[in-house]
Image (cartoon, rainbow, N blue to C red; front, side):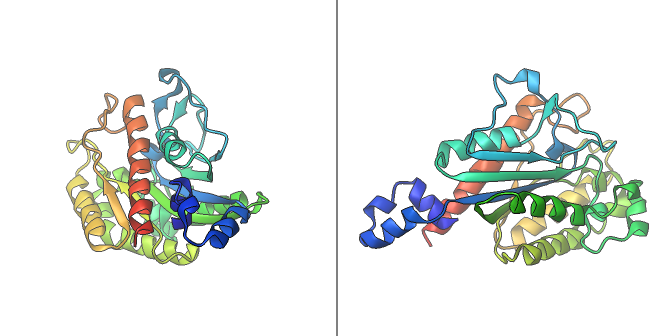
Amino acid sequence: MFALVAVTAGCASKDKNSSEADAAVKEEPKQYVIIMGGQSNMVGSGRVADLDTVDIPHHIEYINRGMKVTFSQDSANFGPEVGLSQVLHQHFPDSNFILVKYAVGGSSLLDWAPDYDSVQAAITGNAHFGAMYDSLWKYVDQATSSTNKTTEIVALLWMQGERDARIPEAGVDYYPRFKTFIERFRQDANRPNLPIIFGLANPDPARYAAVDTVQAAQKRIARETDHVWMIDTSDLDKWDDKVHYNSAGQLKLGQQFGRALVKHWETNAKN
């Protein structure tokens, strides 16, 4: 991915070794895979009707497996993919991306556990979701095997935590569960330093008794784990339920994900 930043920034033509630059240009184009997971604020409740356009640029393929708590999809709504695509197109117009989103409204880290336990998952009332971690990788494998280009997983974007914040019994162990999830995800992606960017869960404390516990766990993860960044979502607009981001909030959330990715790639390209 660091080569991607250098080429799109126009640095290849300035390479002192022209043969290396020529070789880089002749390389088979890659598709860079960005995985998007979580629950309802990753699924998205922004209204398509509120946007001038929701067309994803031609060099960005978007595979949407996002579902509401009923396991149904809603084409009238959008999530962070719109704002994210805007930023990717602005900075990397000549690079190919696949956005693979699998998110389900109401899902807890218990539902996302790599070592899924249906008894544990029943704590949050959604054991019928099944082993979501396995489903995520199934969709990623489908996406990467269906293209004739070389693919590379370059990031995980994560927006989740509201369900765990609703139920103290689940929220109390958010830190070890999230840590395990990140470690296992990187292991299965074969990318020990895979950048992981997540949004801070911030539902209404009046109805989400464990929100402080979940937030403390998320902040600790971001503070202690290399190549993991947390997006501050406190200024994102919400609908009246004080949980779900509205159209403007979803657009901004996606843009923040994109800017965080650009910052990571540009920073690491210099190292």
